[in-house]
Image (tube, rainbow, N blue to C red; front, top):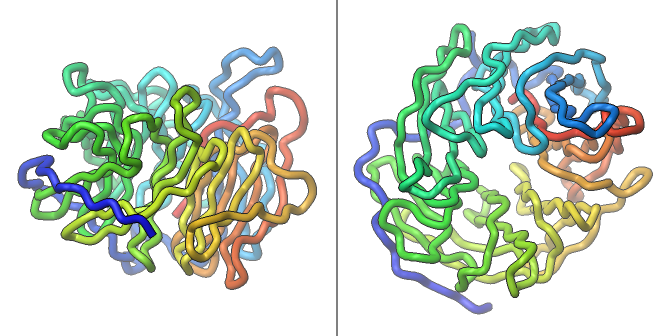
Length: 371
């Protein structure tokens, strides 16, 4: 195994509010983990393949039956991306293609009320993430043009947001994932990190360090996922124009360091990566490859999943349940439907596609599932 160990670089000053990633007890505002859940998704095209702002819902039952509810509502437009829910499961937030944040409430019967059709602020939203009562908004711009991670408070009673404020300046930020009492950030630069360092750790005490996942500057970052049982981080590069093949970087992480261990390549268009909460299994969604791959045990190769029916068609983002009996269950957006997958004891299992019909009005964009 080739090991690349890089110099760690300070990235930000002391943080006044850290991530809390422990599983919460069931209270009034944390739902029972063993229950039916709603999936929310966007339908970003009309019958003429013109832009649309339609959204829909599906119901996933405890016995893993996924069906469309027929509910439709209007918000902003999100042709791709992940919907992030407040810990209560009642409020959902998503980045929209005009840089705004869409927000909605969904009640126990699946009735949707839009909170913000388009919440605009100083942050141009590329993606969002929720932790406790905080919404993190990722602005992909360069620092001089407002690029960074912004924070807004979520009112746990009605889902409304405070005015976002800049927390960390970044360049071409893409995604974040919690780690210990902090988080791992995917960006081409974070505050004072060295050029080319793409993965940044920010801890509860505010110290941070960075590492280059690929040992070059040719990557176009697409996804990050952490296998918590191994403290192994997976970083996807799906560049269409660089000299390198598409690839996945594999890194070891701890509170003290990040080490770039190896690179898995070629792997066409790794648009999303999902690490199992139950085992060492890791799935990679290949958009242009029309495939779902499961990484082998040593993360040096991969095999394609066996499907029920046809293979995925233009798959996109995925959402996963991380608590309760359905832990490890995944909903995957694809062309004209939502595919249900699940990490189980024998690996990743396909439960098939729930079709929304034919034509451009059935193309699924952004997606999310209640926690």
